[in-house]
Amino acid sequence: MIERTGSFDAGATLTVGDRSYRYFRLGALEEAGLTNLARLPYSIKILLENLQRCEDGRTVKRDDVEALARWSPTPPEREIAFRPARVLLQDFTGVPCVVDLAAMRDAISAMGGDAKTINPLQPVELVIDHSVQVDFFRGPEAFAKNAARELERNRERYALLRWGQTAFQNFRVVPPDTGIVHQVNIEYLARVIFGGGGGGLAADPSGALAYPDTLVGTDSHTTMVDGLGVLAWGVGGIEAEAAMLGQPVTMLIPQVVGVRLTGALREGVTATDLVLAVTQMLRKRGVVGRFVEFFGKGLSSMPVADRVTIGNMSPEFGCTVSMFPIDDRTLEYLRFTGRAPEHVALVEAYAKAQSLFRTDATPDPHYSDVIELDLSGVEPNIAGPRRPQDRVPLRDAKSTFVAAMREWAKARNGNGNAVRRFESEGGGQTAAIGDIEADADGQSVPGAAAKDVSDGAVVIAAITSCTNTSNPSVLIGAGLLARNAVERGLQTKPWVKTSLAPGSQVVTDYLAKADLQRYLDALGFDLVGYGCTTCIGNSGPLPADVADNVEEHDLIVAAVLSGNRNFEGRIHPQVRANYLA
Image (tube, rainbow, N blue to C red; front, side, top):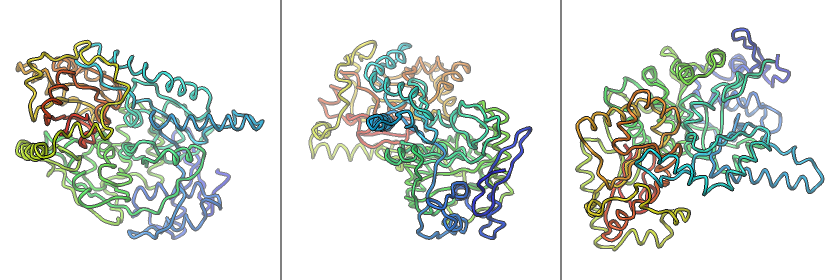
């Protein structure tokens, strides 16, 4: 039994197969007359277990547990102390955290203490994924060359992270050129329920404490794992460091907006179409600072790959999290991604014991607001040319693009060279690319072809971002489209900078096994790296002749990417029209 059971004597034992786990029963709060678990939102139950387990009489008191247990659609403005189970970092924001830990060790050593006592108190996982840039493309050696250039630029930073992995306890680093942090998280690191191993760690044979996997991360799209039933959101570096050192995240008891899903997506409609529709819908409704939670029978037809696509774009909605409950689809995904059978069994048993498991017979929770979404009504669409919430039905793509072009042309004719203005205000590529030969290794464009670039031309086409490369259905769809295009003799225009930057090496494996990668290669979508590239502005320079032509004539050119953000100047400083597709 659990030695510390809290004010509600909630300690209990859960037996799964031949193993026993200790846990804190949410049912104890229902038995005390404080709540009706069946009607509490899933995310509130996760927070409630966290308070119940972490009650210490100081940061979390009995009154805090009771206040959250009595959650209502209009919760009181009361702060609670949430302790995430782990912290997720990417390299840009993670390096300062490691530097601070090293500085703390130096300070302890200077005071005559043991520096090795300074370690993260919570598990910390850092994925190196934000430093790769698309300098080389269209060729079988593009990946190796980009990886080599990445190492040249970041050798000192990577040496620090390598030292940190060996020096600190509770700190692990996923090396560069492996994958995008959020895709690595859902496919490998996420436990869903702690206690049964997972994330590359063995289960504790002595019988561990079982509790929900929760986390904060130093990237806004940490919410991607919400689609796997893991409560997570992005925070700043100071909050992340505090969580690493065992300090709670202080937050108000949240309002929770429910999105009731009915029906199923029609054939030919993708998760990308769905998430762009959801983005527009939630931005219009206004969910800033709120939790969003998806429920309803439509979940039964929605695989986890589609759910995490939605969770990923929570920052674009404006909400804190976009939660999905644990159900049969969750278990299916865990098996599909190679989680141990014992781990999957724990997830199922724990979720059912804690009223966290959803079926079509599960009563609808009470929410602060409810939005209806019939999945069968979602249609193919894109978003752009400036914001992710600017959804455009595919049938209207031409007319809206023409209208946007007219607006830009009018502004250009009246206001001069917008690109030069952007650069004068500090915009442009990073200084690290200044020594790159833009025409090296196949990066040049025939002079005549470069001069064919005119207003409206697409100069960047990127299969990129954890938002979509985590979804096998859309990646296989891209491969099939490439096959059909090649078989019909279609070719990519020579001035288009094409790239494939998946979020996981498993994408390369299944595209190769499906015999589809060669068709993507034929169209110029060779592998350029595993990491955040075009989506965060690491698209690299345009070929010099194309860039010069765009600059000389102040051309209004476009990018098309499978990403999550498309603000003007973000993808590339010379590209004004950016479409998510």
